[in-house]
Length: 164
Image (cartoon, rainbow, N blue to C red; front, side, top):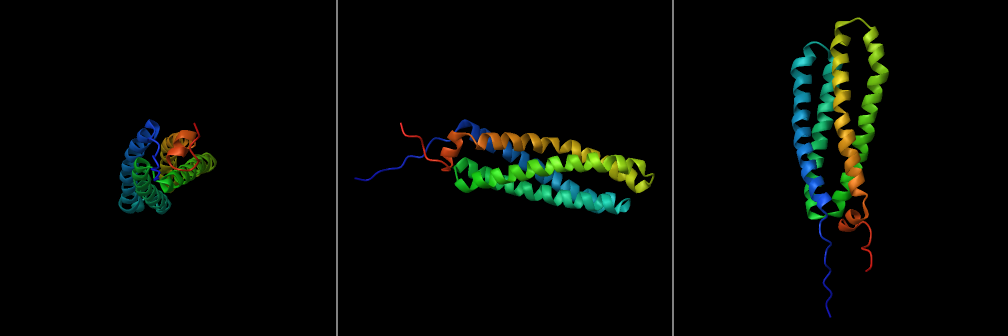
């Protein structure tokens, strides 16, 4: 007798999370490209430090956008690797975003005390970046919450399905 294994239905929260992740991924790609372009062509003329910050952050945000698209597609298909990738990216994003806000809180007052054209350009950039960092804190927290629910872990095959 053959046994057919039936996959659990995809929870609605996973579908919503996948759609939101795709939206965030597209925004990440756009912001990443904007950061690189601004760093390379605009800010670089005024501040080498500002250009480096924008180039690095733009590249990282762009890479995260690509990874977000990949795991979002995996979410829709219920792939176990997408749960692992999504959880890992969410944790890294959460920690790094908190770090960005912390660095700005520490470095900001010191930069404000220095009177130089370079720091007058870098300080507002850091403040804007730290304000933007609130978005990944929220999205990463929601992602971690959703992915750690039992029904979601069952869907991705991370825990066994409860016996009826």
